Image (cartoon, rainbow, N blue to C red; front, side, top):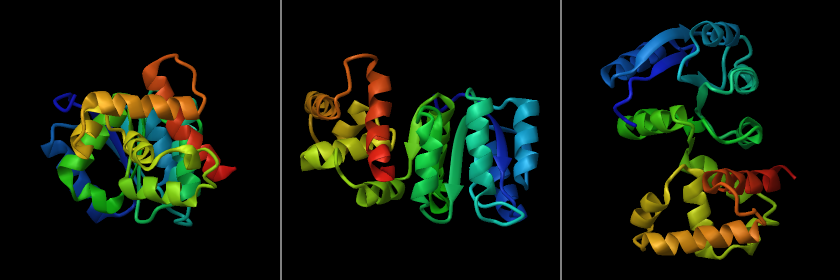
Length: 221
């Protein structure tokens, strides 16, 4: 729910960007309970405050390589109830796959340019905090392009479009609006993806997550 007041821990080593995001989040009704400039500070802040969501830059000191994403993976393991929204200047498919490997629920990966699109960023933040998935369209495209396509190649072009939008976190209704088709048509495409990926008829939302993870596993394999 977009009106929910979120408690956020923000990890970003650039003071200018960090201060700007604190101001943005505050203006949009979020409470930034702590900020962090390093991965250890992030882990300590999450342990202390147990926020709804942690917003994490992938590259942090001292090496500016993968400290942020490693911390995010650790948080996923130790505090699974905390949503994780990572952001990066570039698409890093290997780390996106690793972050999602433990389950896509409550996880997001956005490019930094997306943060400037305030409404999209806030929607993604709330989606992740509520246990959903928010993947940047460019991340999804790169993952799809890099996949070995064993499973993905079995899909029709329309089914592939639906899967990409599912990966971005869209509901059937939202997909129907974007593709200008009926919601019933989307349901049929989603069902076809489940069948081709051999996902049993259990919880629908769980199958959506597994469908996304299936082609991520294809990419890693």
